[in-house]
Image (cartoon, rainbow, N blue to C red):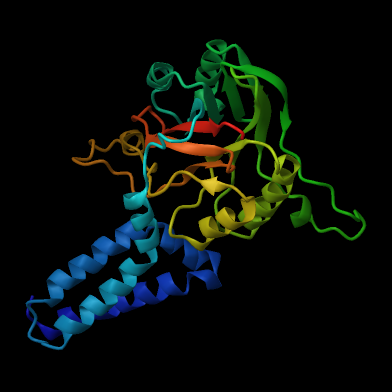
Length: 331
């Protein structure tokens, strides 16, 4: 523990991590490291433990600087979570409980998924990967709701009347002769216009973006989705799904800026759930293994957040997100 080489190795490793985290905007590959920010905080802390008793006295003061550089990118999200008020009691409106869940095509316990989502019983349920192992579960859940809409592996289930629905479609390029594929790329998704009990209408969307690497497909899907959202720019909108982007990554920050909606899932880890390890034959971890939040709920400023949390393990490698949102009364 006191050998100088141990301190130098720890310092070098943490300096490299800090550099990667701060250079994340230069490459999607580097940005992936930001999604695992909580892991690197633990690594940096371990390095500090290794360095502190070392004979290199100067290393004791350099390592905390590197650890601070590793921690810094995640501070805004952490503070926002700590300062977020769960209940807005002074603003009247219609409360709606929504749930979004990637059910996982390799779901190891579809019956558990069905039971636990049925127990939660939200007003609106947005499902992704409702196919393969999860296909029958998705259909069984749809049978429990009065209204449903589907596009590919995405589903929207509603206890309130669906007035219209369809697949997400990107706005057509101005000139098909010169357009490039990225200009009409859009993630798979389904939307539905719903009439709430108070008679007002709102648009709910379930979508699933691809991984951030390889290639630029996620960035293209982000831009296509942002373009599609412009159709409902003046209406109450709730966008839900698996975005494959976690704070404090640049990719999630760009989504926050592009969609024109407020992300309500602040500092919520949803992946990987216990079932991911159970599927690999591992024993359950002694603590919750969820590390990153890639499942999100976005909403327009017509909505106030009443309560947002993660749900139980369902047999999927994701945890569901449950949010109670209040559609604020108009003046």
